[in-house]
Amino acid sequence: MASPVLNKVRERLFFLSPTVQAGWEPESKREDFEELKILGQGAFGVVKKVTHKKNNIIYAIKIVEKAMLKKTNMVEQMQNEVKIMYSLNHPYILKLYNHFEDDINVYLILEFVGGGQLYAVLWKQPQKKFDEKTSAKFILQSCLALENIHSKNIVHRDIKPENLLLDEKQDIKLADFGWSNFLKPNEIRQTFCGTLDYLAPEMLEKSRQHDHSVDIWAMGVLCFELLTGLSPFAPQININNQTFVEKTTKDNIINLRFQFPPLAQDFIKKILVKEPGKRFTCQQIKEF
Ligand code: ATP
Ligand code: MG
Figure 1: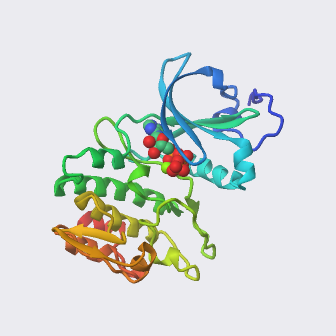
Figure 2: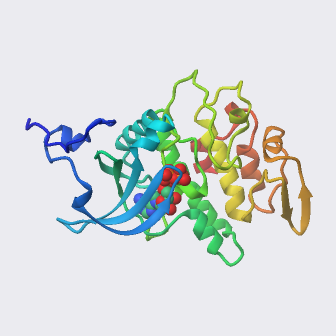
Figure 3: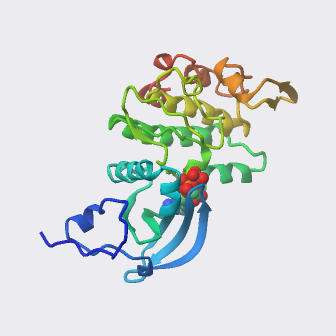
């Protein structure tokens, strides 16, 4: 095995990518890529569309500042994200091809997808919602992606339309494994993600453990949102021209307080179930 050719890095935070570790290629550098445009700006970094200067292949590169990772104690979390993404290979899951670091940043070389966020596409619809057939397609594809990660004991924990990307064929690519983890039964984490809307009740009640069924719960919220353009547990929503002013989102989730949308009631009833063990499984969602 050839020995790896590495960038000179003062303080290395990450393990080597599999292809570098194996000595198949030198560690990549930022200069290997031509940066075309910004695709997205996350809490921890920026995602850009790039081409590889040697072969002109288009990728998305996620650039995250190492100082920021250290300051927020997120190094291990991001190492996790990278390990998890390398372990996955599925048509509806965004692929990670490579990663590398220099003194300033860590870089993830991702499959580029051109259809944007499901969220953005939803908001571009004339009525800010999808029809039943389109919604069902997105739910089924997301569910196949979930079934795959759950079979590897991975929970995503941040399923929401911002993290579901679309390719040119309008097929789902599950992205952003920044909150995902291999299942450790006793670990309960308090998440500080921006929106509460997709959190399962057991994640809000700190004393309770959570497992892969938190992703299933999010499928119920997603289904509601795709069909109505609304989030079921928002403090105030308007369905069929009736406005319901409710308590806080958190309170609504914990007390399972929401109005059913006109469509897919039977389906949502089986998923937005407070008791995690009684929710539909991926298999049941597929068969529904
Ligand atoms: P946040 O913490 O805010 O969720 P993040 O830093 O974890 O963001 P991602 O969610 O992975 O970053 O990506 C941010 C955005 O960049 C995505 O929502 C999407 O719009 C865009 N993006 C990410 N990866 C790709 C990709 N492979 N192809 C095209 N666009 C992408
Ligand atoms: Mg994201």
